[in-house]
Structures are given as C-alpha cells and as structure tokens.
Image (cartoon, helix red, strand yellow):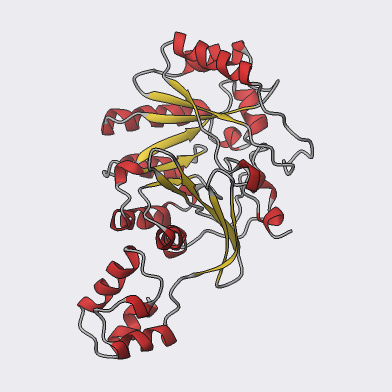
Length: 332
C-alpha cells in the first residue's frame, strides 16, 4: 500500500497510518485537515499519495435529495454510486462492486454497459468515503453496479471498515442474484451481522431464466436452499428483492407462486417498482406494474403469511434508482 510504504520510507512511527485512517473515516477532505500529523508530513503525503483511488467525473442531485456520483478509477474504468437521504434521518450509500456487470439481467441498465473489472476494496470504500465527506452516513447497500459475490474478497474487506465511518454491520446489506460460490463463502465465513438480500424477480424457473440468465447456471431452488442455511446458522432473515414488471411477473398467479416458494420464517420480500432504463438487453422497454397491481401482489403475499413491503423509490429523475445505473447515459 502506497501510504504505508511512504510512511515507512520517511521513518514515521507505526501509528501514523492509523491517524490518517481515523481522520479519513471521520470525513476529512484532505491531508491538510489532519492536524495531529506534522505539517511537513501532511505536505509530503499530499505530494506522494493520492487522497482517493477514484476521480469524480460528474455529480447530480435529485429533487428528493438523492445524489449520484460518476467516478473513474485510476486506470479509466467508470462506475457510479449513490447517496440516498430519507426523512427519518437515514443516510444510505449504494455502493458498486464492479465497473459494469457481466450477468446481463434484462431489466437492469448496468448489464447493458460494457463490463470493465472488479473493483478493489479501496475503490469500493472510497465511494462511501466520498459521501462521508459530504455528510454523516449510517447505512450501506451493496446494490450498485456489479454482482458483489463475484468480487467477494474486496466486498467483505471494504465492509469490514464501514463501522469506522458510522455504518454498523447490522446496517449493511449485500445483494446478490444468487452467485453460488460467493454465496456459500458468505454463509460459511461471515460471522458479522451483515444482512443478505437475494434478487428473485420470478418464482417460475423458466421466467426467471428469461429475466436473469444466471438462473440457468445456479437455479433458484439451490440459491434458496443456501439462504435457508444462512438463516439456520445466523438467525437472521434474508431479504428478497422483486422488481415489479407490468404484464411479466406481477399477476396474482405470480404472487401465489412466490408465496408458496418462500418460508415466512426465513424471508421478507421487498417489492421494487420498476424504474425505466431505456437500456435493457433485449432492445425493448419494460413497463412498470401499476400501483393497483403492486398493491394486489403485496396483499396476496401478506395473506399467504409472507411479510412484504413496497420499496420507496429514490432518485428516479436522475437515473439513480434501482436498476438505472449505467455509465453510458451518465456521460452522454
């Protein structure tokens, strides 16, 4: 790590790296603000060590207060991250784990952009630190660009440092489409109370495969079995994400199938109104379910004993909502 090497070369004591991190995690915007460091050291670090692994390219703010930032890595890969503000005081950062995503879910704009690479732990963490410099943050979701469990080592390493920013493990959620190698590792190895969310979007296997090609490789039945193992080991429910697509997966029959599939002791459903992308992989635009269809779907789940809520949409007007992140549009 460049910081550690620079400090060692200058003969600085071992606690200097900890001081730099503590200032950074509290929202310092530059080395110059780190007043417990000697002025000469602050100047040397400013010359030798970039303050962030990411460059800010553009930033937009929604009418509802949501902020979307377009970053580029040092080697030129684009990514987006989002700060969501809620009236109850929550400040949640939506983090990307990859530049783009190779899994091409048909309703998600990210799958339509060119896949770049996995992000490093510091590239993930620097997204959260960028927003921490703007204001205090207290929740995080790994629901931005990419499949987190395709990059599990960097994701878990970055998550381990989030409590220093004010985001506890209980307020961190990692979302996956069901990438089984990473999911198994998460279940077996992670003993912190980090939340798990699974993208399902259809209970019928054939329909899910049409929407999410990953289902052909890792069938939903196997994914849910692993989720039940997580619940048995960790005693925590799994969140189910379900995007409501008009005329595709929102019928009463779809709702009854989902209710029959899930154990209410293990799962809680988040119904997500579809956010238009204009970039889906089949070249045609999905339509969101009507409010009435969403309410009917929710009612059927509740009557079936499945706890379900409708997610509050944030940042739709700046293409910052669920499924809308796509750098081609952001740079247009």
